Image 1 (tube, rainbow, N blue to C red):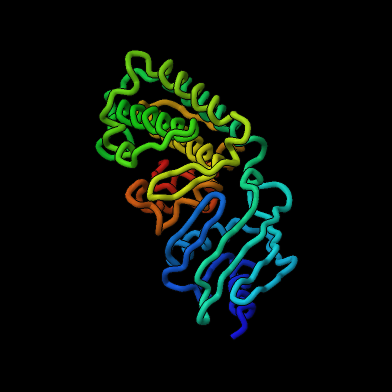
Image 2: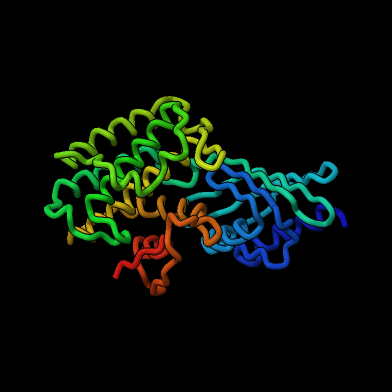
Length: 304
């Protein structure tokens, strides 16, 4: 069968079936590489496509070229909550009647309204103000078996690791152990001031010219672009900020555009095949739930 015929079914899944890849001939060991997410199995990619496809409002293949078993397509799409049309080049390799690999090439900064680093700064500011209001750091948090202080330690410790990566350091994988970051006292005597110092260091690293476009070594032998590192920082500060607020019994408000950026990144990167113990199973939310409640549910948290 002509590789273009195989690829046509792939694009029909995006245009007509909201990303549902059922019936698309993906090899079991299908690999995918993109600016914000990569996969090493068909199952992981199918889960991501189905979740991301729910947000796609328009999808079209503008041009297509083939060279042997490789099909290159120029695609346009619109996706909530991003304003405007996005364009990408996608390379799909077909072998023995199956798509064995894919590579998506586009500027991931189009996924957020405004500069992602500006959104990160606002997320940090919210959580710094929150830490200044916490009275009981020994209270239990929504994170299983962690106190509010342990969540704060984990947040600060994780942001330090991400900052070191953005600064150009190769961080040993064992340092990413979640329990270790929670148990080490990163907060000190003034948690808000400690987070402020780490946030300032993180922002300085992310604002170095060219950092958002660079590739950085990450866990599992992967590489991530600077935009993805920034998006992880944003997700960590917003979601763990909610964990802290919930445990401390405090209100926690996040701007709609910040929530939208985190939700879109989470949809693309946190799937049923890629939770790896970092996030619990998705929690169902009402159809009329707010974007923030929907985000929390996707990450395995119950807002009610």
